[in-house]
Length: 515
Image (cartoon, rainbow, N blue to C red):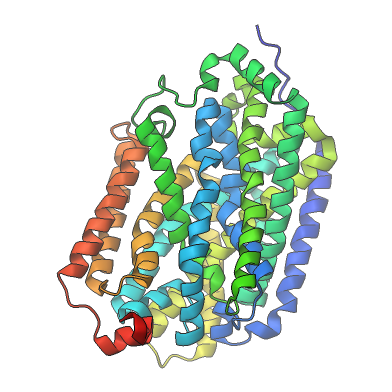
């Protein structure tokens, strides 16, 4: 019989210190917003700054938007729930996914901002395809999937708050939303980018320290595996063949599902609009800048992510399956509970602040993209004579709207397992925009028709396929390939069957030597 530790009971003193830590972090973010206020006075600068942000800030900001509540909370819940087989979805492919965003998309996005004045990702696509329809449709598709993804950020905040206080999460969620709103409407893109950089550094440190402390607490790697084996030998399996090969568990129970996780991470990082948007405000990169961006991303999204998965395993070894009984948080409480035992108040407060930083960083990046999508990519391009002052005010209004929608969703119906829920949005966004964004920046033959067909198919396939996955009729890994391969077929076929842009236009986009 296993002698598990009791699940920590909420301690109001932890909550008080958590409030202080989070408040300090949020105060600095607000100050950064006010510091950047002068650089966000116009509509264009509010959306993407002045293309003068350096590589360190850009790299840390990119790492922050990539990790989010998914990595700093949800990944631990995955390995806690299923054991070592969860590593494939909770850490193994993460750094593999983010690097192509640097190599293939970053420079191109920065080029479109500098040369053509692109202010949003959809704006860049409108320029690339010379199509208002592509620009507006891509904006709507991004909004649809990012609202789902933003729900996960609010759930991450609610979960961590419950762990340290046991109190309802409403007030903490509300406070977080208000603070994000303040530093975004004051500082715009530049203020958000600086806040993201701060949050990226904080969450990287928090996850790294927690992973080391948790592993030390259980007695090291050998003791960890021994405790897991005594509890349930299947927790050591790299493929959980005892789990169903349909539904969400396919990602852990079959080689097919594990291969699919590689493509989920590869496409989501390169195709995520809030990731590639980090380059819109960056100065032109030289080799040194590129090396610094890469180093920053690796430090935030490399070792800390691998240790996140280890943290979940340590929590399972310490608490057994007891955390799965706590509704509605379940496995997502794995990391905050082990932080209380492994490090006490100092580590818990560091980790709690890091999770809030992760959740708010991705939330703010997504909200900025969505608000800009509406005003720049839907309203402005169809009503070009509308005053920029009015558009700026509308952008700030939509920032509030896109904070309120996921907040209400999370409060009313929080997702059961954070990382899996966010995986649906990742499949849709990645499958569509790996082609429409990354491939289109290099393939001159791509056309607006191909991009439009790709987006329509990707949304429908994700919606219909997601229903079948939740009903245990289809595996989540199978859904990934259905979306990805189908999007590719419609993208390439639609492009080959229609005329490309005129030669002169292609020369402007790709350079005369490349046409």
